[in-house]
Length: 395
Image (cartoon, rainbow, N blue to C red; front, side):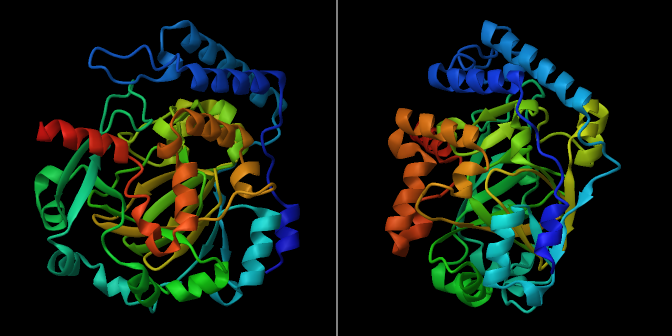
């Protein structure tokens, strides 16, 4: 694999401009004072910033329009279709090659068939999930909501049920088991998911193993990004992924979730149906000037997703099972956790100062310092919403 040649052919990122700088200032100002959160709909739900009738909403809308004009005028890139994600042969997936890829290319990459011989592929068939893990309590989220409501994680409907009921009852068709930790413990992961091979390639000790189980073909995530190095194991079903470089945040109507756990684009929501590339080009013609990467994962494939890369994920099978292994490390100067998107990382710092013990920065630090209990600290990215709902139901 010629990594240097791939590096030379990298596609353009969004160049800084006066209005992208203004967007950054407004984004941080709004995070500090939470102005856009003050105006909500009649049901008390957070609304999309750019549709917010307040002064801050009008400013976001104005600056967004200016950034689009600059992007289209510069025409640094014109699309002829989605760009295929690079695939690495499994024999080339070594520590040295992977480290060089992350340092030089810093893009998503796929390893086909990484789990082809792993026992987890048999264990996670639907009948085995029900028979072996059916009594486990899971927390699932309903991502269906109005198009004018923000997908920032503050408006999500949640439920607690058994994994058996989740997989068999019709009322959970539109729910998603998201960032769940109850399937395998640390040693089971090493044994069943080629975990030791991953650890040898990463040469890191700490990973958060978060499980995703979805029943409905055609369902999707929002366009979002997160500050973590994610090696995603696609175990059951097919998933279609689209990616956008972190630098394009100023033209994606970006907002941070509660406590800064993840960033999300308010251009789309979970209820939209169809191919992401086609949807965005139809609804937002300026996407013709944004490189959009694409890959369809088959069962057994591995996908590397660098920190802060934007991604939309659409399920193509009636049952999908995946495991995100989020490898954690102490923050240090030059880390991709910081440099891939300094604006979003700064946003996380602001959220940390406002809510220190609920911030992912604190959570990750605990994970690094408590390696024997690493999976206890990220029960779900929506933990605050579930905890609040549980307390309300118990009253």
